[in-house]
Length: 144
Length: 290
Image (tube, rainbow over all chains, first blue to last red):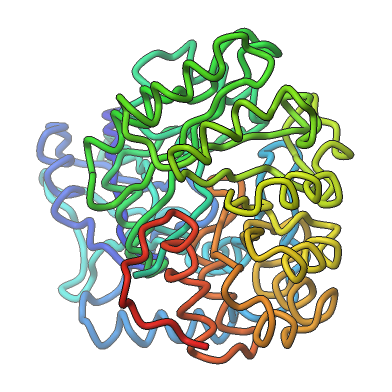
């Protein structure tokens, strides 16, 4: 297994950042010819999703997620958390992260990411700005 | 100019090179799992909240925990890193025999712009005679005092010492000393409003978010516990925006201000002009909304 951790400093409350170049670079570094790559966020108010990297779609995705988890709903998670000593004002981030999921997988064939022409890997920030960690995990598999 | 008058920089990266000191801060403040923040993150957060300036507060708990949580010198270092983004307040421990000397140094040498005190944590009554030399220094240098008032989440605190009524004698005896009741003295917001109505040298900040979301808590506190009209009509020159960040959420609190139904001119005062008055930085001839 080849593992790479990357850190992002996000700059907005909600933000979508294309990670495809970093994923392709990590696969190349790993030297793995055939296998699987997993991209995994280490946070619960961020997501990883795969979609077409278009500004219009980013806008539509953000609006759709906001309809599902609007800021002004009375959420149970809006309260002081003793373990943190601070308020949990980010229920919308948790709910949006639930929809996108926290990871994606791609096959690696002949040392390259086997992705569709319109597929890009997105890191989704839902409670920014913040410093975020993402794992890129490359695993070698035997082709039968 | 939009100012957050109540910010604790305990976890700012430039003053957290020492892991033991960072760990001490987590324990002393009972704030956990937040990590440290590079200034780039702070500036991003300010941009998202629409803030132009933060007022960074030192915290000197020398006699209770044996050290400062954030020292006056550390506040100066942060100011030097971003002089156009930060104001800085000193702190001294009133039980420290060198408190007066340290405060003079903070104003004269370090150029700090006010004093931050926490009666409940530092274990003093605001009206105690021992405080008089400290207030005298602030009056001599025309520097304001920001008091922690009302509930404190910090460990080893006595809430009664920060009850708004404990500040009345100070406000009355020192009419030229500008004092701020942090956190609006929550939960005693009506008592805080009473003091502000009676004493024009008493200010309060909005750094409270103890239940619910920022929007829900602000609506409860500033439209129901006290009617919004009290602020909009009578106290509009004495309320300042504060977040108590990182305990509370700067971005959503800044946004929640807009949900209170206040006049635009009142919002402008709360966002910035009142803080400039409190800091003694409002210039002659600046327009004042009445």
